[in-house]
Amino acid sequence: MREKAKEKKFRSVFLAVVILVVAVWVAVGTVKAGKLSFGWWPGGGLTMEQVKAQTEKFISDNLTGGKKAEIKEITDAGDGIYKVIVQIEGGQNTIESYVTKDGKIFFPSAKYTDNNPNVANQNGGGNPVQANAPKSAKPVVELFVMSYCPFGTQIEKGIIPAVQTLGSAIDFKLKFVNYVMHQKKELDENIKQYCINQVAPEKLLNYVSCFVGGADSAQCLQKNGIDAGEVDKCSAATDKKYNLSATYNDQSKWKNNFPPFPIYESDNEKYKVAGSPTLVINGVQVESNRDSASLLNTICSAFENKPAACSAKLSSDAPAPGMGTASSSAPASSASCGN
Image 1 (spheres, rainbow, N blue to C red):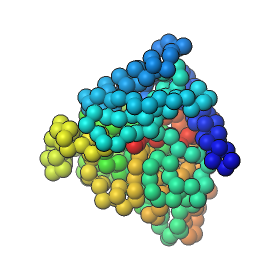
Image 2: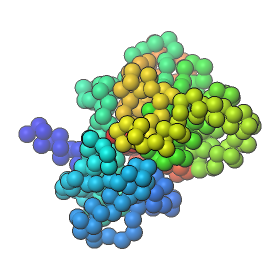
Image 3: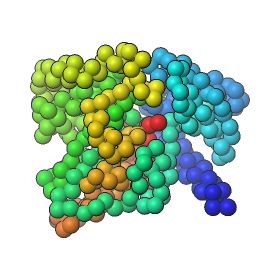
Image 4: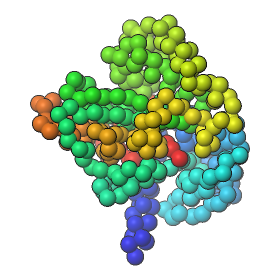
């Protein structure tokens, strides 16, 4: 009975996430097939086989670097959702994902959102999810993202005001998941942001805030007075050092059907990072709603003695997933990009 109740709860929560994402994308009018890690197709009233074919095509065209995706199984998960079991050409493992019955939205993964400290991380990580991190005098806050993951950009929009409010009271580090899912542009942007942190670390958050707000990279570099030549020089050296583009172009070296991004490999393994976003505070994976007020409260729970900045009043509106400045008064979801 407990398992059935848990499954029913999952379906209800997942449907709420779908409704929220659809509402946000309709409101801001930024839906474009292939731009994000899930797709939008016009029309409705599709058969299960039509949804299956469309989803296979979308994954193959946008998420696998040219490898063919095959849905091995598609089943009715209830509440307007199909569960699909996906296998990528040449891969041994299958990936459990979800797609709406009208074929409009594909979710690479989903997880529970109740912040239960006794529940394992549903995006595949092995660390327990904790509502509060261990306490320290100066919390170390590490955020792992993919630069084009819509849920990674969502939490970045929420956390940046919190991090800037706390300033030097915390040690904040923006890091990257050890693989990419959103084509070569994501690999290139990951490298660029890594290099901005090397050549102008004090300007990184302002750059990222500009970038996830919907502006292009060149504009954000110029706006924040970042030397594009120095960033390009660092990017070329970093690409060569880690064989990033070379590995991206050689699918025989991919892991779990996706191109690797090993710059923070040891940290990914240490914290069992499985998807974007993953928030780690004082060495422990922590769940939080993605609005600035919730993230400030989550980080501040890790102080031995809270600084005055923890009393700051930040926005409790959840940022919309993806690029842009739209927000919603509804609680942020815990959806993620990942295996």
